[in-house]
Length: 94
Image (cartoon, rainbow, N blue to C red; front, side, top):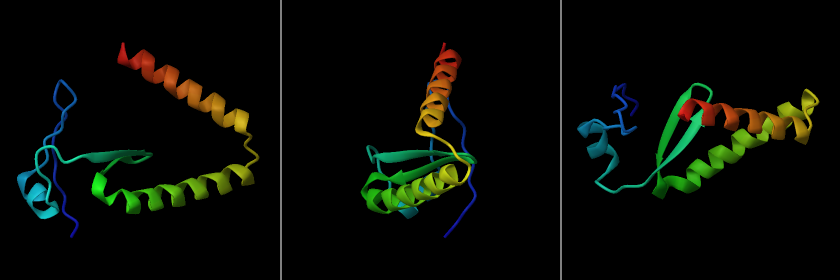
């Protein structure tokens, strides 16, 4: 089942999930969630579902590697891009 729900990020970066979603997915206080950042947003996955999530992550990683090879990216390009994103994130966090 796919349902559209909205929530807000609090001042201390916490997100409250709708009760109906938690009930359907069996989420309880303390349930660990994996957070995947994607171009279009975030994906939350129950940690107990990590094998499926890792399979999807590896699939996406394979696609990225194939694309990087097609466009001639080098490891140094990726390393530089990661450093730039991390530096930008540190600036935003201040």
